[in-house]
Image (cartoon, rainbow, N blue to C red; front, side):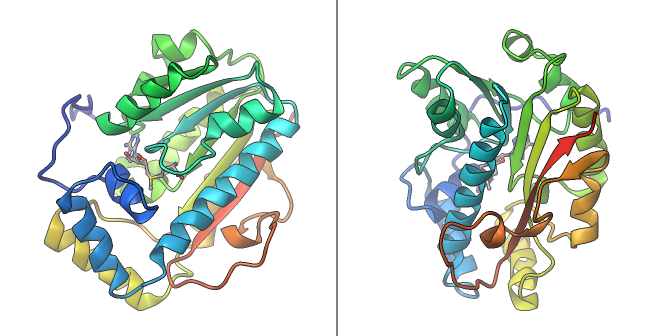
Length: 267
Ligand SMILES: C[S@@+](CC[C@H](N)C(=O)[O-])C[C@H]1O[C@@H](n2cnc3c(N)ncnc32)[C@H](O)[C@@H]1O
């Protein structure tokens, strides 16, 4: 790919941002009118869309805690998002082991500003402004290299991010490059917008993208999401609706669905 994917450190308030729209969806304040407009359009077909976002966050927490409880002490959170609703990944990891390290990676400068502010609260986390469509710039980043030893198992989590990576940018190839660096015994956690969602909601997101300039989102079928885990053994119950992965409480059905899974690299 020859396109320059170096993220701009400047916050653009005229184009909707995935991170800021997600912040608004979750009840945060780090967003602008362009971002709120996207979410309000979404709510016209899926009024419970914020619940979908909260379910994704809750899945992420359970998945990260599970991985940390398997003894993993180094994490990479790709497309980490604005830390709108606690716990963030590092909170969950540090509740299991305060000495573990988490590297946050995001393409959005707003995320980086907020995540870097968290560093003043405690050690054990690093934030990188980078685009995962160039996985080698992430994996070889000196700040990541300073904290992640790829000879040891690592937890890599990619929650609700691959759905904004278009097929033309080869999301499978991106995840494959990540998987190749991960030592045996590493864990991969993914959540992804699902083709199980209501057809009218999926069609509406396409309309939103065309009208607002928000990135196109991909509602991929289970068989495509499963390909991200090639060479990894899925932890039970496998790839499921995120509400059903190690559930702690009953959560209602929603129109916009995400599936999620955790896999372990064999060996
Ligand atoms: C829907 S949010 C999810 C945030 C968080 N992972 C969570 O589940 O709460 C998607 C995040 O991925 C980031 N993102 C989107 N495309 C990206 C890319 N190419 N490289 C890095 N981050 C990206 C966005 O900026 C945003 O913060």
